[in-house]
Structure formats: structure tokens, C-alpha cells
Image 1: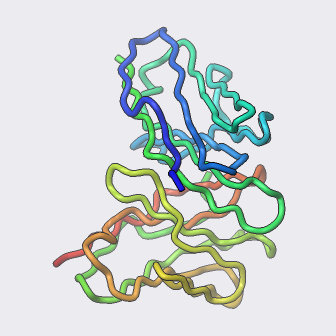
Image 2: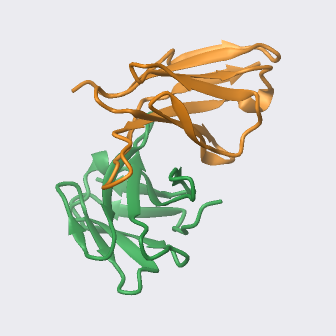
Length: 115
Length: 109
């Protein structure tokens, strides 16, 4: 089975711009979660999508948004970029069911640099 | 905020066992303890999880205290490829994984 893929792997943007990151989950997985990783704050949960609906949301401003398509692929968008948005953005997929254990499989991440 | 506490760093010699401790004193009775690790320049990967009983898989063993307030991840024979940041994790109220700072494990040849 192919793993979780994220595109692009690296991105450089300037302040004020917007950016869209893409995540393709493992085949059959219906849940996609997004995390932001920075040296200062570590790994922080952004949001989770399940069957095209946002199921959970972390404590990030509205500039961070996402969506999920019918094939479970997900995108996250950050508008009006700030220097502090420079981070590694990680996507994780899982089966997403509410019973049993849902192991999360992480992609390699997209490294976003805001200048 | 993270609900677990771990040492910032640990060192091990290659081929020796490693015991990585974690405190999770506020864990509820129905929450799993999860361990993930993150190798350099990679996303986190699942290691093991458990609820009450000790657990073993091909990567590691997980020893959970009887009161569930702490657990220990055991790597039976550390290799250089085990050098990573190890995260002991609880799930948040929304079901998401809450990562702390983790323990950076260094393995010396």
C-alpha cells in the first residue's frame, strides 16, 4: 500500500500571500488530520476531516482552513501568511472509525517558509 | 497542552535495551496510551499503544503501571536507526493526538 503523500514538499512564500497544501491519504482511509510542527511549539493539531466534513478543530485562527474531497484527499489553506506560519505541516490519515483503535499514518510533511 | 511528561533526552548504547518513561497522571480510565516516534526529517510513525495490560509488538514493548499513571516504552536492543524523538501521547477531547516535547533518544555505536 502506498503511504500518505504530501505535496509540495517544500514551499517558500512571502508575508500576506496564501498557500494551499495537499495530502493524499492511504487508500481506504477516510480520516485526514493536519498538524503544524515548529521548534517552539512542537506538534500542534490543526483539524481533522472525515468523509468530507470537519470533525474536529484545534486552536488556530480562521486563516487556517481545510477541506476534504470525496476521494478522501485533503487540502489545507493558509491565507494572509505571517512569518510565524513557517513550519512543517504534517498530514496523517487513519480509517477514522469510532470504534477500535485508529492508528494514524503520517506523511513526510510540507516545509513552508514565509519570508 | 500536552498531558504527558517525558525526559527531554536519553542516551543508549547500540544493542542495549532502552527504557523510555512517561508520566500521564491525568489519563482517564478509557483512554489509550500511544507512542509514536519521529526519525530525523520524517513524519511521526506509530510505535505501540496500550490500555491496561503490557503490550508487545515487533518494534517495542509497552509496560503500563497498574494505576495507569505512567508507562515505559522498552526497546529491547537499540540500533542506530532507533535514534529519534519518542512521543508518549494521550488523545485530546476531540480525539486528536496531543504531542508533548517528547524524548530525544541518541544511540551510540
